[in-house]
Length: 83
Image (cartoon, rainbow, N blue to C red):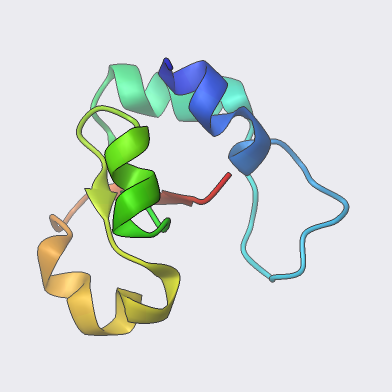
């Protein structure tokens, strides 16, 4: 799918969210994607990531982020998604 379809549930305000991570609007995420202003981190399992992900996204499972931050380019906004 395209970025809009993949990211829609992850970035729009979700009253059912169980974490404290700030949400951003879909339009903002799309702009950051188009201008390459952000790094997208897909927190799915490798199997799910292999099936579908945003082009250029980095696959780091949520429970491994603190151990794998060296994979993330510096100086850009980080947008993590899992929906």
